[in-house]
Structures are given as structure tokens and as C-alpha cells.
Length: 465
Image (tube, rainbow, N blue to C red; front, side, top):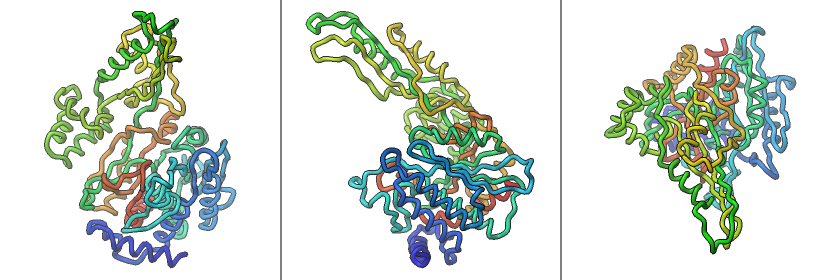
């Protein structure tokens, strides 16, 4: 197996673009070989919610790797939760009074139907410089590299001052029940490095453009809108119709734009990202960072799906249902409005604003959000920024490093809810055209392994002292 992995890595590195060939300057190290081996074995577990969920078995495999690498068995716990499980591994530090440094990730993946893929999603394949399989991007590959880096540090005799805790949740892609349980257990942490967020951008020619770490994410919320009516026979229409009333409210909401907002993270993102863009989008980024009320800039950014979520709260209708018979007036009509709320804004305030926009007292609103809690942006801590900038300089010299905000939800939400600073800090670099997380034929360049291990060793060394 070891010879096979080394050969696969050699072939994969050889197929990478010139800007990534620093990964092929020397034969694979034991840590690099182990990272790919762990990733391939992890992808083979069908860790998908529902019948046959193999997340518990995957957690057991990862525990066995950590134990073989020097972790004590009693330093690693696997906790079953419904059909899944989560794992927490602790590397004890020399100072028991120091708060722990947490490395956070997840080992569940979204569903993947083999019939839709060019390759079986749960049969890992290394081809043309890429690792293919469900979890190659989100996020079994990154988990494997982080583990390999930790085990390399152990082999070298490194001793952290504060505990280093590696935790993997088991339902981040669905209910986040394990995510919440882990954050509750580890709410005394000094800092969380979420390796399921952040990352580097490659140009389409493979040249590294910039790296962003995530310092904030939007709050997920679902609001149910309901209109009820006595109904009646469809041959005798009435002025008040539940479907019509709800539809009118949805149109008003769809046409509404929440007041754009910026914070330290997003302002810095727009200023720095503008340096790597051209034309109207670059001008809009600079103008918005300077004045978030600039209507011209707002119009340009709002029209771009990649940036509309960065300029404030967004709400969109995602489901609608109404009526009970083809020949009857509707007695009830309901819809779901999904919102991604800007950090620091309370969901109740957004629901109240939507109710005002709907402008119809017959439309009842209800917060039906599950698996989400409001969270503010993490502070821009100097120690983290210095450590991540130093680690990136060692692996991708000269590549700009700046913060970003995630429009989606991650496990960081639960830690921030408890007041623990959490930062998306994955070192994986991708082209936009190669981002197939949650989609078909998911893949990630194997050449990420060498620089990512060096990055983790630097980052973890500095932040665990």
C-alpha cells in the first residue's frame, strides 16, 4: 500500500501546473505519504446521514491512526449520537492552566449518487494530479493532512505548551447536533482553527493569487410565512385568497434589499480582493469598502452571486405550498424564507423587518430555524493573524493574506456562540473551476499536500506555545 501511495503522489505532482511544482521538488516524505493514504481511506467510508451511515466507523479508523502515531487511547473519545458520532482527541500540553487550541473539522459528507458521477464517489482515485471522491474538497482531504502534520510533530518530539485538541463533528452537513455538543464541551478553548473554512485561490493557469482566512460567517435562519382563510367553493371566488395574499407578500420580499453592511473582516476583504480584480467589480469593491451606502457599488456587487452575500443580509423564498383541492378555495398557503444574516444582526430583527415588508397582517411569521444559532464576527486577533501570515509566507511566499466572511454556515458558528474566537484556516488552494464541493466529481489537487503540512506545522507550533 505504501509503494502505491508514493507512486500515486509522484505521478500526481508531475501533472500539476508550473506554479504548483514546488510540491514535486523532492520525493514524498512519510507525512505526505500518510496524508494521502488517510484521505483515500477516509473517502472510502460512506459517511452520509441516514441508513448505512459509516461516520462512526470512519471515526474509529481515524482513532486507530492517531493511536498508532503516539496518541494514548484514553486521549481520544468517540461519542455516538443517533446514526453518527463525533471524535475528540487531546494532545496534552505542558501547562495545564493554559486554555486549549482546538482544530475543528467534520468527517460527514453530503449524499453522492454513484450513477451521477463519472467515478464512484466513495472509491478514491488519484488522476491527472487530483484526488477524486466525495470529501476530497469538503473536507476529508484537509482532515487527513492536518492529522499527518500533527503526527509528524509528535515524531519530531514537539511539546505544546497548551493542549492541542483535534475534533471532528459527524453531522456538520445536516443537523449540526454533534457540532453543538462539541462546542459546549470545548467552550473553554483559547481559540479554534476551523480547517473547513478559508483557503487559497488559484488563477486558471494554476498560479496562486491570494489566501483568505475566515473571521466571520452569516447566521442561517428559516422563517415560515402562513396565510389562512375559511376557503370555499372555487366557483365562488372571494377577494381574499390565501395563495394570492401570500404570493403578493413574497413578491414584495423578493424585491426588497436589506441595508448593506460592512465590518472589519468584510471591509478588509473588499479592499484586498479589489487588487486582484479588474473593471467594474474592482471599482465597486473599493467604493463599497469606502462607503457601504454607495448605490452604484451596491448595484454591481448585488448583481454578482459571488458577492451579493458579502454586502449584507439576504433572504430568499425557497419553498411554497398552498391549497388542499383543485376545486376549492385555499384554506392555507405557506412559504419558507431562507435568510443568511449579517454577523451581529439578530434573527428576530430580520423577521420583524420581513413582516413590515410583507405589509399584510394576514401573513403570519414564525421562526422555524433548526441547527443554527446567531453569532458575531471573531475578533481580529494579532496572534492569529501573525501566525497564519507567517505560515503562509513559508509555503507560498509573496501571496497576499487577508480575511473573508463565509456566506454559509460551519461549525465555527457554535464556538462563536459561546464567545470562543474561531477562524477558518484551511491551507488548500483551488481554482474556481475546480470547486466541486457538494457537487459532482469532487476533486482537489494532490500538490496541496506538501505546502499544507508545512503550513499546519508552522501554525500549530506558534499558536500552541
